[in-house]
Image 1 (cartoon, helix red, strand yellow):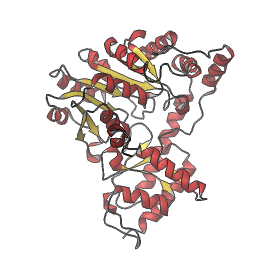
Image 2 (cartoon, rainbow, N blue to C red):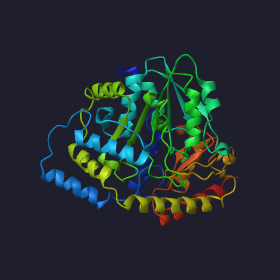
Image 3 (tube, helix red, strand yellow):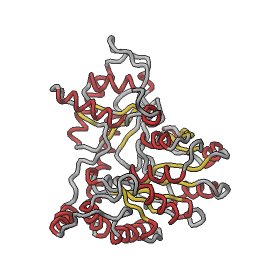
Image 4 (cartoon, rainbow, N blue to C red):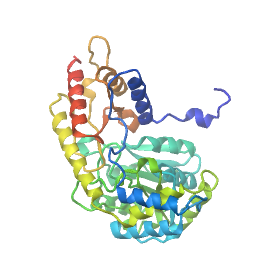
Length: 398
């Protein structure tokens, strides 16, 4: 242990991946575990995208790729951004990476100095906190609550700003809450940030396609007066059911894109060639596969919420995107089944995986210790069984 760097010793394991690992271990022991801890669509990649990958193999796309991605892929991403988000970018402002997680890490490491501050609305995605640690910077959390639909206000963000603030980082639709910021809400934040020209914004839009609000997805970069400080992050894993293909990208001011290219050139170089060719097709030739997937996710959301409402003590909002529900569960703190005492959300998550054989993720992993995250990225049949198990196990706690 002493031989390891302070950097790696300070880093936490991803709690979502840790719970997934725990569920796999129990399954290997013969337990019938339902894993609702991981954010992965259970749909297969659409056939037209798979065919593009096969074609790329046949055409011998087997050589190293440019660090920032193939030129025609970056041009396709620009077309997608214009078509879907009304954002104007050129190919030299796009950097393609091995997943949106790397895209975020690139941007943070390219922008933030040791000792500077990054404002992170909470609840937040688990890796934001650890990526900021890697940059030797400080996360400053701004807390939202279920009562406020897990969204922060411009005034809350303003109150968190100090002379050390370099960056604000958020996701919409949000992981873990599923909350979606409207255009008006983002514009109010952007107007507030006009007063702070040295603060940059990472807008994580990886769940963009999974939106039930009935309104078009809103991007922070749509506001011209702040666009030159916004790094838009997106990718193919969630909206196109391509988690294992590993491709994310940023659209950013050119100097930030160049910095991320420089950094990535020393870490991973270019993203997988076959994935890149398939992504060109995903960007340009969308079919109704995505719409069908979103309709199914909405059915699952409604089904799970209706079942959760039958469980006493849970406080639930109605998320407008992604595929998570983030109920407040502190009603069960201090209770026991006679063997296990539930002191906090981690105790509750461990109790539920052991007693109900349902894997969830404790809320403190996302910055809210009163909650727990449920992923509904699986079939209604499996979800029904899982929620019934949770209901029985929670009923034992007195």
